[in-house]
Length: 114
Length: 115
Image (cartoon, rainbow over all chains, first blue to last red):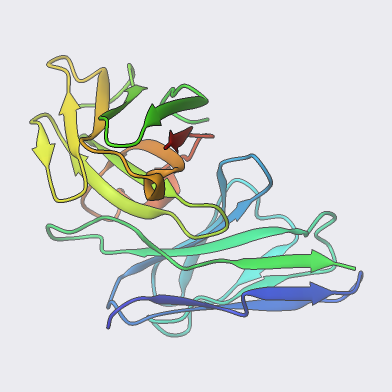
């Protein structure tokens, strides 16, 4: 079945450590996105990518980095520069052209800094 | 900033229709209205989208006003499993300018379906 997979589901990190969240899709979608969600809040865009080897900052990119070396993969690194990294992280993908342009989301990674 | 306005919460009796409103008064001519829902601690799920005509699928119906400044998502026979946060979003649907990078999720509407 086609879909978008995030791993791990739960992640614990010590302060000062970098950590990388995985996002893989087999939908052949061009665009991929990372969102952050805090309790009781909507989704805030961190980074997005429309094509391999290219990505753009969203509204809250500081303290995060991404890469898009393959179409199906868009990993997010939470660096030690992110002052408040504890949150629920969601990855999404979408086709850009064609009829079906709705976004598909992964099940999320809950990151906790300990 | 989100381009849509939704009530923060609504409730509905099981088996009744749930009508979720959304205002998008600044919508552009080439922007579609999309609806998603998020069950607690899961990723949002696509429900339906439309441009100006009413749309229906197996999950819901979408009614868009003639001036396109507001819309209503209708769940015809709400069940307990429909309890979720519902997001209304507007965005251009096609082309490289039309990415989720221009799609803003507000806080949505928390729909609670009670027995």
